[in-house]
Image (cartoon, rainbow, N blue to C red; front, side, top):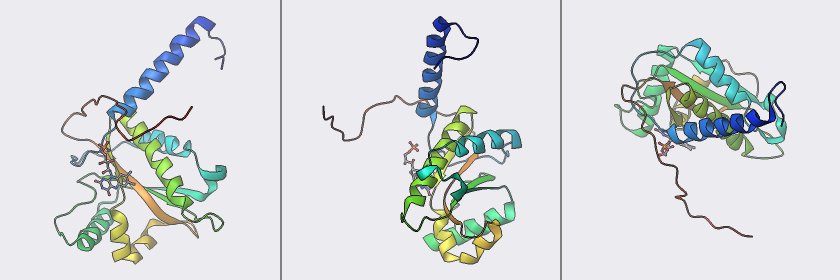
Amino acid sequence: MQIPGMQPGLLFMEMEKLKMELMNAIAMRQSVRKYNATLVSSEDIDTILQAGCAAPVAGGGHERIHLTVIQNKELLAKIGAATAKAFGNEKFDPFYGAGTFLLVSVKPKESEPNIEIADGACVVENMLLAATGLGLASVYLWSFRWGLKEQPELVDEFGLPEGFVPVSGAVIGYADDTLKERQLALNVSHNIIK
Ligand SMILES: Cc1cc2nc3c(=O)[nH]c(=O)nc-3n(C[C@H](O)[C@H](O)[C@H](O)COP(=O)(O)O)c2cc1C
């Protein structure tokens, strides 16, 4: 791919820089489970949502994705309390003190059961990487689904379009600790077939 106005010699350097930045974001992304009260700015949220929109979605069906940003303390507390109850641990805070919850909802596809879970996961991962790139802490969330099962009427408070169901989410925010860089490694079972 040639970038308009750029010398061919520079293109390689730009691509190397992009690779470095991307691999750094992948290495720096990590689950953070303790946040301070500082809220993420709307500018950063826009960037993160745009990253979510650029995620791969089965069949290019981006119209089946809906993103909800929840910064409402009362609603977060209600979901948190329902989740704590479902887990049988009243001290459990599924949001870890973060004030910004990004909820991914998807319209399930009748012809392809469960594919909405995969779609939602791709959207969340793109948002986690974008948050990392902005210097924010984050964690993928699934546990809140227990709270929604415990108290299904909470879903009505999300203002979702008809037919959409919450599938996954993430919190983003600021941690008091700095993120630790991790060494990338091929550390899961694998094989190569040539
Ligand atoms: C599908 C999925 C669901 C997850 N749900 C939660 C969750 O509800 N709460 C949580 O604290 N972490 C959750 N995580 C984060 C994982 O525990 C975490 O990614 C894993 O332990 C690896 O750590 P790392 O993210 O720091 O690399 C989830 C991750 C995935 C992929």
